[in-house]
Length: 359
Ligand code: UD1
Image (cartoon, rainbow, N blue to C red; front, side):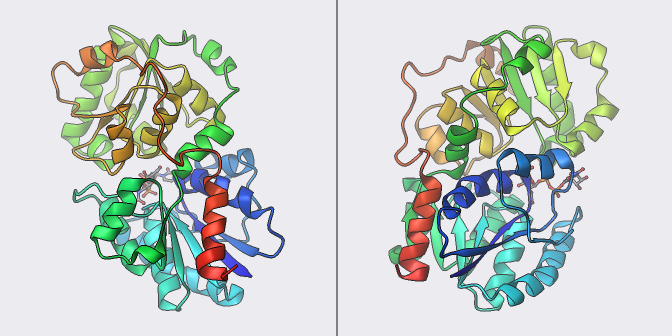
């Protein structure tokens, strides 16, 4: 039983973890692992693969950075060879990044059934990720939904329910498998007291390329720095922007750090007072750790985290944003979302057995 699994970015790697781990117990399935190379810095890619114990990559397509068109076009072109040589019964793709849509197109064009992990999330906005998600749905043969709402979205879009399986959130699963303990020494190193600091991340174009977005982000950081300790792990692109716009004397209580290992980041999140982010994955991870998350975005595809109350959509320009963040309280009892547990990878494999391998 030949399979091809494709990943390309840091969140793709995190999502691949539980699936590849479950697959390893299956000697009857031969998996070819393809990395598109969309993320290539060691901190965003190689180090994370090692940390999560992923199998060695069989093909790295070396796509690198570029516009949507360049990334999609290059992956599309370079995916063909590994797909033809593996001749798989299906290919598995994760999430909504440029690598995902491109790999799905390459597979669908060769008649290979595409299995979409994290299917059916919808933000309803004009983001490139939303465009990718909708197109991937059109190309996929098996849709693995992270929660009830995403399954319902697919059915509402007339995807036959026989091709939809709700398996749980891979991000939540990784948070439970790889992020529940360890890394506390980081807090001491950064001089942070549990429960008394805020984690901030930002990487979307609207926050780190658009001048108004950058101005809003730096204003919030300055206001926070006057009142609370902050730790801000930097995506390489965010670092380049902030190096130009931030006078760190202005923000003495903000610790700017390089991208962290999954374990260390999970540790910082677990012990945080709150998280302020534009990341998609962190919205699920904060739900698992029961930490208030403030997502600065006009819309989110992560409805489950909003429904259970851990995640709140905000705008960086809200005048009382810092007050709201400081007043945040976690739930008394950790919220429970069905299937958000350690077994999402196993459910994915079981769905492949049912729909692709037929037992
Ligand atoms: C991509 C995804 C986004 C996801 C994010 C997770 C798309 C459209 N976007 O955004 O949905 O939330 O990954 O991190 O696919 N760069 C480096 N080193 C790297 C990779 C990128 O320095 O290893 C820099 C480059 O300047 C590059 C920029 O970051 O141009 C953006 O990288 P890109 O892969 O295009 O998108 P992300 O912002 O990482």
